[in-house]
Image (cartoon, rainbow, N blue to C red; front, side, top):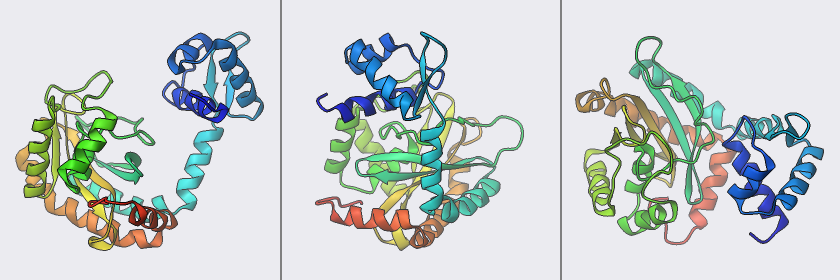
Length: 276
């Protein structure tokens, strides 16, 4: 890392994944920075209201200031205004968890969710809004990759990594690029991508790309997820039409969002992106 800004943002991004806080030594080790420099950065971030020390000589954690800014941005950009009613309706119809992810250059990020399961066994992660989607192991990631050429898909997967570095990944997560390419071909032929016991053990999901006004650039992906024992292949086939209709509705409604309009202009400006 070179610039002060880059070092500061690395600390902020690390603390996002550790809401309970971290000691200076652990932050320094995780970001490969000297502890003295990390301490100075944390003191400045605390002065500006972005972090707080949990107690004297204790761990540092983010304040609510940054999450509040993010939620305010999402609200003012019109994302939830256009998306939430469609997500809520799909969740009610499917009785499962529905999530919307949006493209941020070469990343896919979960931004909105609706839970349709009201009782019994259900999948409800609760902490994935704002999380970067792991492309190779998730249904949403594979839906996005299936909307581009194999060459483009492999570049993105190569940059992110084929394997998700986290506990709980399912045994069916693709272990080779060849298997991933086969799964992308199946998704294109079927009309939706799937991930069963892949992103998380015991969970199954299906997803489709969301295209601006139906045939424009891909803005993100819409998925339905639930326990694998309930979200089997037959159930996914039953939900496919409703999922694709909701994605079409989102693509049409996106014209009313300043965020999505800006994304379309940015995606159009990227060279050689066939699926975006």
